[in-house]
Length: 340
Image (cartoon, rainbow, N blue to C red; front, side):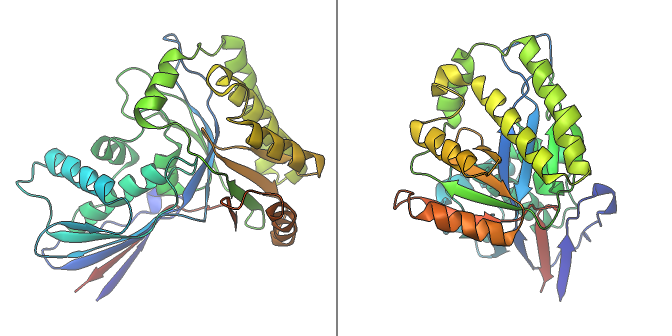
């Protein structure tokens, strides 16, 4: 019989999954993530990293976990899927991986600034736990089991809750940075997301970059936090589109300057810089780079403006660029549990 479980925006409303020994199929759809910037890194006297991001409805990760004679992975990112299952099997002290087939039905490009790896690994972690009859996992459990959240916690909280998220940053020994704020953005707002050719830093290259970057000066951290506290969040609460857009651009650019030693400026390439300047010159104010790029986001008032903006841009973008329109995702991942 079908048993649907939706993870809403308030974790206190979560329902427990019944722990029963019977076959079940798990279907999961996650949001994607835009990361706007970090507060601090490279210093030992304050919380490290922290920052701001938002979850978006598309493109998202979709997967299915079904009973099988033994573990198999199909679809894109099979090697990464197998590595996650091996990690979980060790964490859960299983003699062999769970007897299931994990089929990746939809997966955005990796290392494009959309948080694809985090959403995939959290979906596998939560899905396999439900497949085995376990209850819902907390953000800390998800991070611990999956190995995510070493720096940013936006994707982990976003997987559970959706919305506009602010996280505090980590102290030594913490599994996951504390969640500071979560707000809902207006459903009518739209993000035009432009995935340009290339890949952003990830894995060992990202670790080396953080190891070589100069630390964020205290006054910059104060400035970034003031921008969020006095402009970005109040504008979101009051649904002030223009004020929110300008604040988003300022925060993203200032946070990006902290990576200038690696990127050469606030953005990862000349192409990204030119695209952001073009959008700003045409009146699109809330524009920036997500994470290390190469994806660029542009916030617009509604679907009609989004279609118009995308139409203008599509004529001047490289042929291998990917463009999409998406709304804010104000809820987390959706898990459907189908008991056989």
